[in-house]
Length: 122
Image 1 (tube, rainbow, N blue to C red):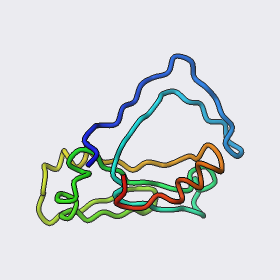
Image 2: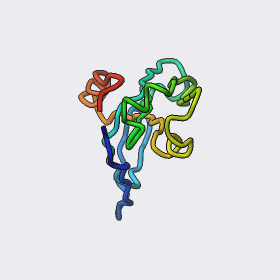
Image 3: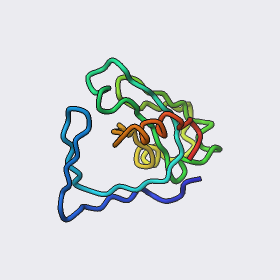
């Protein structure tokens, strides 16, 4: 399990980077330890040249396999979807303990590492 919630903190001096033909400005630091609920690679949509992969991630009870076996998870169109027949945990907890992340690899090394990520791992 990944029990801790993600942590985001503002940075005092924004830092800009060039990624492909885009300029990205960091406004915050973000740390997360989470279970990969789903992974979707994109090649042809508008954002694929900067963010080729989305990860649906879960933490807290949304990283517990006993909970996840009762939740059907999918991704399409840059969105993460879930469906249940009966709620294994409160609906609000599903909504606040999971998220779809659009990943922007900083370089080729990071892009290769993202390519090795598999569903179910944390």
